[in-house]
Length: 236
Image (cartoon, rainbow, N blue to C red; front, side, top):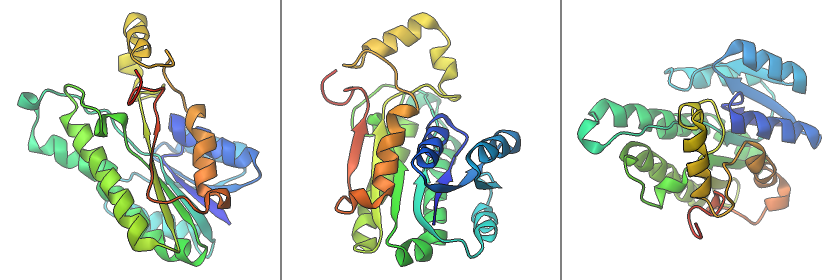
């Protein structure tokens, strides 16, 4: 039985994959960068599929590569940082963000639902602290990730009791896509101080929770939006 990790070469996806491996689990990794993906797959003795979730038929490649292989978990560790004041946005900004963060999630969930249902599986999605806490210039990503939270609770109801669906809402963490914001030391320090715990997160801050939510140890948890944000949403 394997866990399917979409966005496996990202900061969170790679940490999740390593945590599952460390705890004796098996994974099937999905990512865009073949060199990075094959290296991680070799490290973790994992199967993998090179695919871009924005490609129309990306699910077919994954399902074909899985073949008869069973999965009992799906972590959709895909995200973006789309920051613009509303007056500078275009329709295409919202469409691309929704396609990446929401539509592609529905596509792979639909494709994997029968396997997950058969195995009483679990799905973990990712939102953002900005879906519930207002930040300037966040209208694109906040609206898309709010839709992911809506999807979480809708599917938790629709799939119960056979498949559990939960969502993690992170604050900014160290990643490739956050590099432009964090490469300036003063800016990074300023962002860290906005959090009650006075630091920026990293992939390891999420990996154990994702592994828990994908496991049978969380068998009575579904439809939850869980903040992993250094206190940013509540006490900062």
